[in-house]
Image (cartoon, rainbow, N blue to C red):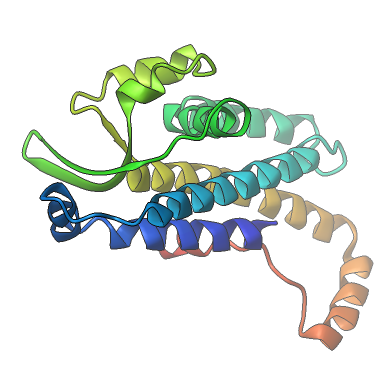
Length: 214
């Protein structure tokens, strides 16, 4: 599942990066039309990524609830990291709120825009905060987050980058901790597994390519 999530993340952010160029945004602002399919494509890539991210979250939750892999002391550490790194990150809740709105309430189509705030320029695909604030499924935490954006646009690439960095870091830690504990407690199993898995070029390790490269 981590491989699927990583591929979806790379597809989404690579595409978003292409449209961060001010030249592209400028041509759009002076009247050059962007094909409607481009906006739908971005929405599709966003939905695919979030779907895989939530599936990965549910998979790692099963590991976390396994008492053999996560005894009480380690589980307490996992809960502490969860609150500090995930629950406290309002970007994560906002991304999942947007996914819930798209899935259960209404398709949200992004816009191409640019903004300058305190000397810093942002450009590319974004959601208009005024539009997002109209949806009932938006939680109070996400509303407060959006109200702090002064220029009125929630840019997708920095939002997704932060979401992926935080969630991948936590999930990577969970998987590595559980693998290390399992390998220590069942060395014979892993010796046999390594011998068998060599026939198909070894085990497929969890994929966190973007996390490791940052």
